[in-house]
Structure formats: C-alpha cells, structure tokens
Length: 183
Image 1 (spheres, rainbow, N blue to C red):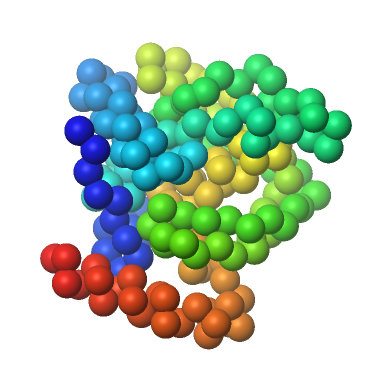
Image 2 (cartoon, one colour; image 1 turned 90 degrees about the vertical axis):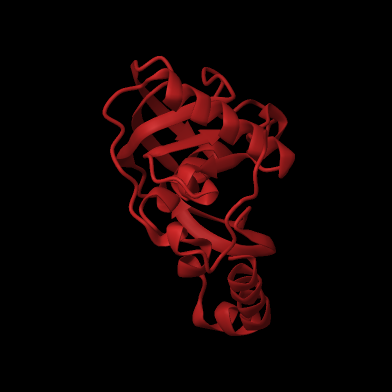
C-alpha cells in the first residue's frame, strides 16, 4: 500500500538517519513499500525520511534510457535496478562536477540546478545484507547523492542559491502551509 510522501516543512525531513543494524524481513518490506510509493509518485528515488521513517535506507530505479552518455551508451551497465541502498556512504567522488536540474518528491513541481560530483563511489548493504560497492556516474550518481542528502537532513532547498530561494519563495511557503494543515 502506497502512502503519502512528506512535503517540505515536515520536520522528519531534517532528521539524521539511523544506522540499520541488520537487514531483516522488516527492512526488506520497508524497501518494497518505498518502491511502491516511489512508483506511485512517478519518482526515481525515495529516502526513508520522505515517508516519515529514519532508517538509513533509500531506493532507486533509474530508467536505463535516462542514464546514457552522449553516444547512447549506458553509464552504469552493471548496476541492476531497482536497488535498495542500506547504510549507504560515499567513499569516493570525482573532482569533476556536473550541473543539472533536480526535482524532488518532497518539493512537487520544483526543479532547480544543482552542482554535484560527476561520479561517486558508494558502499552500501543490498536487500540481502551483502556489502556492495558501485562506481556510479551520470543520473545514477546524481540520484545517489540526492537521496543520501535526505539521509543527512539535507534538502533540495539547501542547494538553492539565494536568488532561487527568492524566486521560489511563494511555492516554498505554500509547501510549509500545506504541511501544517495536513498535521
């Protein structure tokens, strides 16, 4: 069953995630539930905080066609999707950066340019509790960094310039107002 995604202004979005001590059936069920919510919301990633939880867990399903290089070749051919990232940590990042528009399910219809490392190396536990290390680039690298930000209480608004915050002030206030009304 899919549930609502927490919108900007909900205090849980600023919480630090909590380390998952063991990958249990409950954690796998949470990952499956999160995938269902993510698909219902037409997203490619979702962190536990976005559904009111604080486990160090996010899920991704980056469409292959959305993650190709300029020549149409897959950026991350060995990475299977969808994927659950449990206790993820970036253990390496390129000095090269890339700027791209990012959206977020917690900020509906808001897209802002964000600068991030072009490639990252992430270590995590998969849904079977096995340690994995992925060298990611392109959209997958960006999505990993975006969702990992959520696990640290960092939001899309934190990447916005002062000018962008002013430009989107009405929408940001609307999110906060709707969030208060929903509680």
